[in-house]
Structures are given as structure tokens and as C-alpha cells.
Length: 531
Image (cartoon, rainbow, N blue to C red; front, top):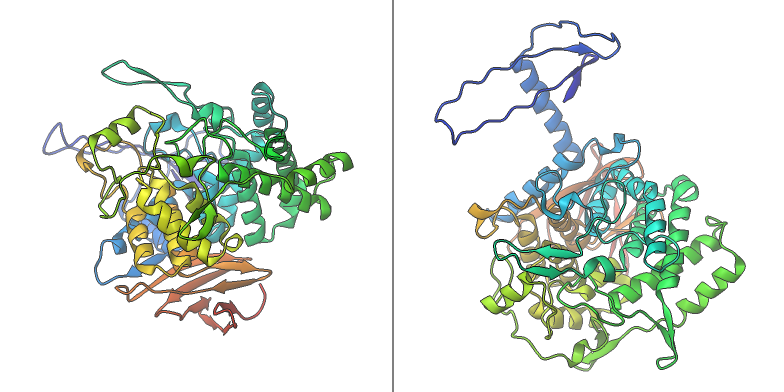
């Protein structure tokens, strides 16, 4: 559907080339004036004019959101364009929705997950749109805001306070995940524990709000709506923690982190860290006067929790790194994934079958590394030694069965200077569906968050894109076999075209004018002038 000269035109066409070698196509058009109130015959439709408008519109879209990689003809060149194209297909125009935009895990291309939305919406797709079209990101956030009553109801029904956003949410914001999965054709029933045990979603929603505020500087929205969401999410997070006399700390038992191979675990590092951070974020908004409804006693209790959350650590090669969850270090070792291949890194049919059967893995094998994801969200919270040691430990033990795994690995790989690894993960994320094995059997919908993760790996990973106050900073890196890359962002109302022509160099174009940059002692490049 599109509008032309005040008229609205729509057509839906299906071609079935399996039925015949040659198909006759007939289109009947009725152009209706929106203001007339009754159908009126318009001028004859011109396919040439329609095609011209179509091409002009896409030229404008690629100008606004364009991205490229010059990698000497490697597949990532097509992959990154394909990724951004599909994100545009899905998101452009969603800011016009009155109650926000609900983005299913597979977009509008597949029925997998029953059309529900998950935490990848906040941590990947939403952040992509914050950088390229903030109004679309706000529509994603508005969906959560308008679903807060459902989240409060879900929390109450499951024994918590505040707003517990479900692990899988439908278009009304209500819980939409399966408690049991029926396999076909064996008719075997398997228990799905994520509905009950995933507790980090509300913190992920807060993180998206924080990043939106940081990138856009939209104080008005935080004051009008964002503070309310953060308040209720903090109340949920506080109710999730329980005091342990044995550990002399607040703990969370019987949970599942983003890694779905282990459930019924205690003190998932990712979950505890994110819930604590959500409470910290709420306290900071109270201090800034953006949250008014929290009592002094409630905020004092939050401060006590913040200072006493239990986080498990383990020692690897003499370095203390975050432990996936309490007791992970004691699990039996798994065979390391040394050879990098396309698709999930299963080493045998037993591993694949165990995953298909939703079994609780009794080894160090993980589906996607919670710790790597966490370090990609808060790169400044962990030292270079911790990030490098954790990355080198967890990545060979990661199957990457989830398409969400590649983006965070790309970002952390770039952060520790492993640009070749970063390029590999960007390739895998951007071409996840193009290279799906076996591609002829694939009918699972497009992995939009993998595509957003590929863009994050390029912009926030290789280019090191960050916000400091009202300035942008970069740490541009170029993989050995790439010539250059570039992408477009919208920051504080200005459209900027970023190009990395060489390692350590960056060009920033704003409406044809080149912005100057300054290199600081830490090696980062800062854009000169405030936005």
C-alpha cells in the first residue's frame, strides 16, 4: 500500500510458479480518494510511474540507511546489504503506529515462535533503529510502555511485584510462550522452562530505554513515559532477589539465562547483573527527579540490594572472569569448537538431538554465551584482560545454535582487537539465512535480530561507535582482508555518513560537509563540536 497525490492504492498478488511455466497476470485497480468518502475512478494506473516512484523511494531509503563493506568480493559484502534491506522492509513506517510497534522474532516472514517478541527486540533490532531512525526505535519502546499493565499482571500472577515482561510477548504484551512442546511425528511432549525461569526481560527493556535516552537525548520521553517503565521494572527486579544467609548476599535461584542449554540454575551472572543494573538505573532516575512515585524506604531498600548482589566468578588462566552461573565451572568439560563452519557448531548427532529435545545439558557446552552478550552491552564495565580471557574461554564452548550469538561475539571480538574474528561473526550474522543449512528445507522466517547484530558488529564493534555526552566517539578498526566499510546514522537530528577507509582512520560526512575529529590519548577519535 502507498499514497500518491492524496489517493491510497493497494494491491496484493501471489505468483505460483510451481503450477505452470507461464502465468497470466491481470491487475484491476480502484483509486479511492481518502477525503471523498466514496470510491471514485481515478486516472489510468501507470506501471512505469509506479516503478519510477518505487526506485526513487528505495534510493532515498538507501541514502538514509545505507551500509557497505568492501571486502574484495567476499560474501559479507552482499550479506550486510541483505541484512539492512530486510530490517528496512520490516521497520520502515512502524513509527506511525499509535500504540507502538510489536516486532516478532521472525518479522512477518514466518510463524516460528507464534509471532511473539523476545529480548532480542530490545538488545538488537531496537538498538539498530536508535542509530538509523530513532522514531522507529521509539515505536518499539512504546510497545513495551503500552504493555506495562500486562507485565504488572504477569508479575503478580507469578509471585513478583512490579512489571515482569514475559520471555515471549504477544501483540497485546501478554505472556505467549509454550509450557510444553509437542514434537512431530513422534508425538513426544517436552517441557519448556523458559516461560517460568527467564527473569531478565524487564532489565533488557530498561537497557533499551537507557540506550535510547543516551543516543537521542530525548528527556521529554523519559520524563513522560520512560520513568514509569523503569520504576515498575526495578520493583520487579527487587522482588526477584532473595536474601541468602549462607552467602550473605541477595541471590536468584531456579532461572534460565539467554543460554537455553542450562536451566534450574542459581545465580546466572547475566540475570543477576542485569537485574541489579535495572535497580541502579532506577535509583539514578530518582536522583535526577525523573521518578517521583518511589518512596524513600523503597529506594533505600534498592540501595541495599545493589550493594549486596551475589555474582559468581571463576579463575581461568590466572584471571577472574564471570561464571555463566553458580556451579558452571564444576561441570564436565566439552570438546572445544576449534574449526569454524557455517551453521551451529554441533560435533555429533547426540548434541544436536539433546538440543532438539530441550534437554538440560550437563556439561560446559552452551548455546550462546551469556557473558559475551553481557560484555557487549557494558564494554566499559570489564577490563581488557577479563574480556579477552572470557572470550577465549567461552567462544570455543559455544555452539552458536542461536542466530543471536554472532552479533555480541562480533562486538567483543572487535573490542579486544580480534578484527578477523569480528569479520567472521559479522559474515555469519548477516548471511545467516542466505547460508542456512540446508537452505532448501528452510521455512523458519528471517532472523532479523541476527541482521541487527551484524550491523552492531560493524558500527559499535569495528568502528567503535559510542556516545559521550553530546559527542560521538570512535575506535575504527579494519580487518586485514577488508579495504573499507561505511554506514549511515542519525544522531541528534543530523544524518551522518561514516566511512572507515583504513585502520585507525574515519571520515564523517554531514550533508556534504566533512566533520573534523580529534584523537585523544586513549586512542579514541572524538567528533569535534556538539550535537
